[in-house]
View 1: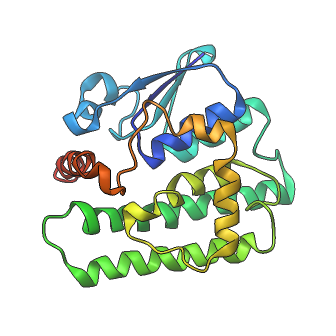
View 2: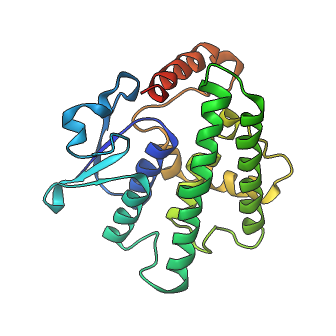
Amino acid sequence: MIDLYTAPTPNGHKASVTLEELELPYEAHFVNIGAGEQNQDWYLEINPNGRIPTIVDRDADNLAVFDSGAIMVYLAEKTGRLLPASGPGRARTLSWLAFQLGHIGPMMGQANVFYRYFPEKIQPVIDRYQNESRRLFEVLDRRLGQSEWLADEFSIADIANWCWVRTYKWSGVSRDGLEHLDRWLGAMKQRPACRRGVEVPFTLPNLTAAENKEAAEEFRKSAQKIIKR
């Protein structure tokens, strides 16, 4: 059994979707990052960086693994699935996983900060992160025009990138004209495990929908508290 400490964010969903795809038994525990729970001593004992997600593998002497990328690799290697053990397939998968960790996540994350959360709207900064995110979407689109999945076979690389790219509206990034990316997004959404994983630890409403303005504002205020810490 695995304990998953998480919140409904793209990085949190990377862990829960991976667990669902691998059909591993786990128990999800909500970490209220808006209230600063991630900085409490009990949590820092398992994740010194004070971020989500973190897993504790009860079957491996309560081993704690933190950082979403490390968690995904650990779980894939634990089961022998979604990450080839060696060779070109492993290299491709790790390359596209690193693409998300080093590029998609940071750029979309900063777009969120300055487009949604930062009290002062600095348009050149917003443009910088949204335009770079769009460029990265185009990189994905070109690759997905060559292959059904990012690393040829469905893998943790697809999960990692999808959990961020699917939130493009919140980041204010256009995906217009990216037909291969659209095809891939649709294929990911059709996977039952992916749909279950993004409902962990609970389902968020569509924050970009007009009818959910109040929920979006509440989410924005909670995120503002986090970036001020």
